Amino acid sequence: MTTIRFTKMHGLGNDFMVVDATQQPCLLNAGQIQQLADRHTGIGFDQLLWIEAPKHSEMDFFYRIFNVDGSEAEQCGNGLRCITRYIHTKQLSHKNPLKIGTLKGLQLAEQLAGGLIQVVMGKPNYLIGFEDILVQNQWVRSFSLGMGNPHTVIQVPDITSAKVVELGGLLNNHVHFPKGVNVEFMQILTPSRIRLRVFERAVGETLACGSGACAAVAAGQAQGFLAAKVTVELPGGELWIETDSVNSITMTGPAATVYEGEITL
Image (cartoon, rainbow, N blue to C red; front, side, top):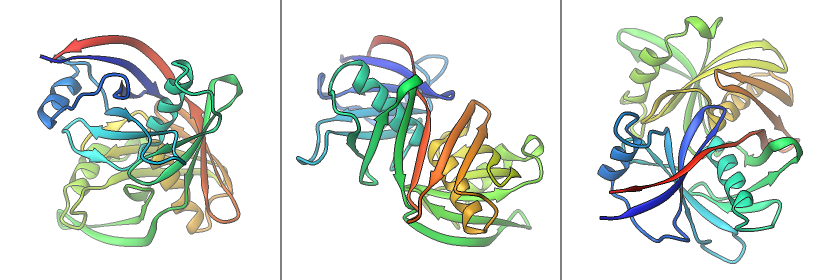
């Protein structure tokens, strides 16, 4: 039996189980992650965030992201903000900003005044553009790109009536996306404000998605609809996305601790 100490955190309702594996080396298999993720019999979370020692001298920490089915994700914007908050709260480092490694690469994360965390998400790692995808005998037009993980963005007139779970689930399991995809449903209010709902790969609809917010803004900017600075309204709250002159994206938003505990598997 293994006892794991953890911290429950969230970024705009996108919730995480954070485990510091630098202090308690252990491994979890997919079945154990699924057990922990269950909201009735486990801890319950959208993703498990696993902090490890740095991989090289230019990195302060490395962290891994596991979905509720035990699969591993490459990127998580809300998770990166929570990891940054955790490191500063636990005084694991006094560096600010921090250089945190992910499967996507090295990312800068800075704690700001007023409880906000700013992270440099970088440029989209690929930009496909518009795709017409046949879903149950109907063509769906979406804008596909990568933010370390795969995204496809659908512009809708009103997110309240968007078929997020139905269409998001179909696209996530579509043959066109063999590795799955995060699906963003975007309503443009003004060039500097959008509303967004996200169906996350291997998770389902979440209250917020940081990389999804960045992907939606990048898609809107690529089409000339959005300004360099955009406020993104998500069901869990707001994120502030800014793109610089070389198309590198910075995200600012809150991160909060819910409680700490331990569980035995």
